[in-house]
Image (cartoon, rainbow, N blue to C red):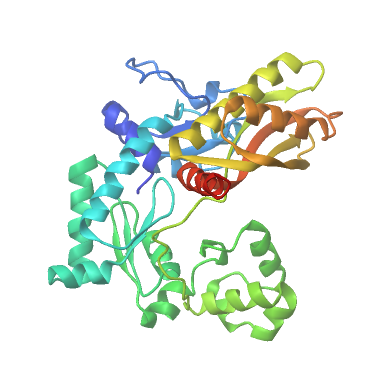
Amino acid sequence: MDAFFASAELLRLPQLRDQPVVIGGARRNAVAAREDFARLRDYAGRGVVTTATYAAREYGVRSGMGLMQAARLCPDAILLPADFEEYRRCSRLFKGVVRAYAERVEDRGIDEVYFDLGAAAAAAGVDARTMAGRIQRAIRDSTGLTCSIGIAPNKLLAKLASEMDKPNGITVVEAADLEARIWPLACRKLNGIGPKSAQRLEALGIHKLGDLARHDRDALLARFGRSYGAWLHEAAWGRHRSELVTESEPVSMSRETTFERDLHAVRDRAELGRIFTALCTQLAGDLQRKGYCGRNVGIKLRYDDFSTVTRAATLPAHIDSAIAIRRAAGHCLRRAPLGRRLRLLGVRVGALRRNQQLAHEESGSLELFG
């Protein structure tokens, strides 16, 4: 989806269309109905950019950037708080459209899917580009939002293709296009190469995917390990064998928040306690809504020097209630150093099982002893 969160906001606030708009900061209770929207230049705090309209991106504003930094780049941008409930609603709508056309769909988060376009096109008796156009128009008719579709032999190249002609683009990349269209791209464009890996590649003089493809394979294995080094080499040549994952179970669920100011475990104990309880309550709601429980509970702390620690504990039974999560996470918290001021707090529940599956297993165990 194109600038998904921002585009969803513009559906409700069409008067902001074509203006630089940044989404970030605290969640609002209702859609603003006034004309005096907050401006980015007036923001003070440590929030980050969730997303931005293309008009704001022209100033260099990017997702994950601090709002204060974004304010220096585009001070007149309008700042709207995120409304994830609305974004999830729009997400369900666009995914429903895709599933109406394609049987095999891999869900990749709130604003992205992979799907078997070839099978859908063959079933309809049209070529892949024509089918992509139909899906694109159906999503627009259903949601009012635009999307960009990448068509390629595998997921790796399809992801790259989907970014090439935003917004509202359809891009076809074939194996023969590798040298002309893929190799000139920066290594960082490839899904699977993060900032640290990109820095290590640049230290070797590898800046573009073409540089990576031409680099000695054995040297990559020696530098990055056999598994990741081999993947880097294969990916640079556009080779990727990952199949669509149409069914998957989450490994864990978590909630975390970055504070507007650093908090001290003693002097800000009451405020931290409220935040901690709220995170546990939200996480319990996520688990219950999706029908999961877990028996591994953990916490994450990030300090004012940006160092991070985690603590976790495995419980004798699966839990999904806010009280139980709060109790277990509290025990983990007592094992963490609390001498420095905190900038982030997170709570996680892992070793997840579906409630129905767990109930069935427990029922079977009772029958054995009945």
